[in-house]
Length: 166
Image 1: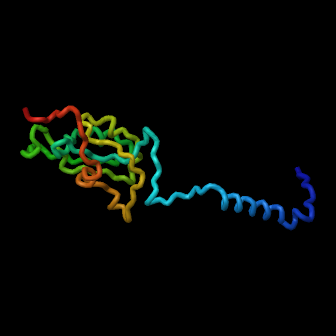
Image 2: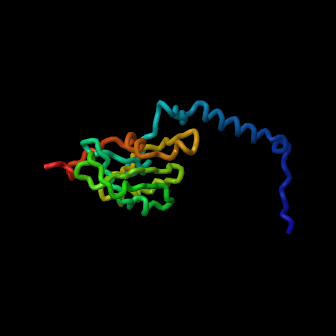
Image 3: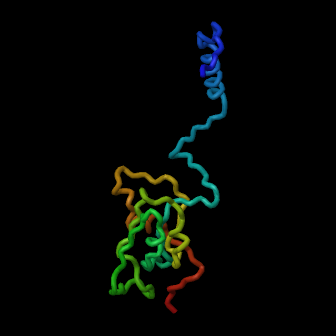
């Protein structure tokens, strides 16, 4: 089947109307409202309910809230979390806490920011921060260890002090 095409006029063959319409769009953007954001100085305001990167938090006394129950590791769909439990030996400085993780790594390249780790954590040790600018120069920098996760997560002010000595 052959589709008949209409003959182009002289002005259409010269492409002048198309070039003119392109100039009009350029001029409209030139004098219109600016849409460019100066990124490091200006940041987006994230909407409520935004799920950012997961970080570990400390309690009021500066101890890790994680008890290495490994629920977050089991529920993580892309298997981005890796926890090494401490073993049977208890550490004296943790107080009443049964055990803390020996190693806690989150591969931020694999993390899909689903929030399952925060939801399943019984100790409220993982929180999703409103952070959207995760950068690194190589893959090794994007695997956050326990110290880096605790430094970025900070201290969580909890109303219930579960492990407080009485």
